[in-house]
Length: 118
Image (cartoon, rainbow, N blue to C red; front, top):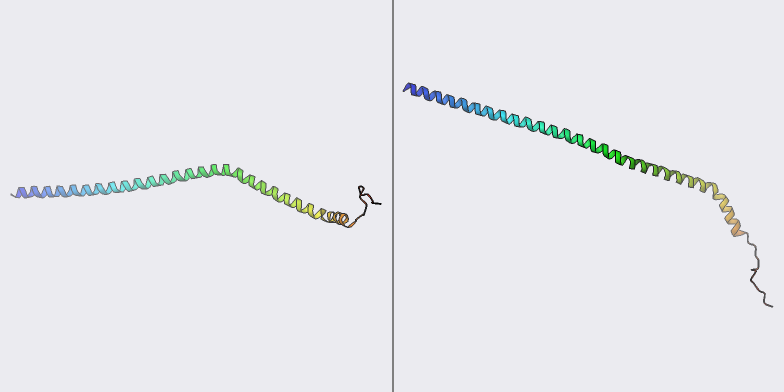
């Protein structure tokens, strides 16, 4: 009977060791899954950053030319406004004199088609 109880004890110990190994294997599996998830997340983030960088480069290439055009148009507009303003200030006085002379200097004449009734 003692040999049977020793056999049972050995079986119980073996079962306990198997249970411990199983739990340890589950823990290792959990750690591996967690590590794989972290690695995958890091890889996805790296890929996303790379693609966003490529997109920004392409966008800068395409939009950069449009940005240059709008800057050139803005510069030309400002230059035209300055030219018109300087021309206005330069010619304003002479035009006012011509306008006033035309309005104020009246030479009354009889129209050539006027017939004097006798």
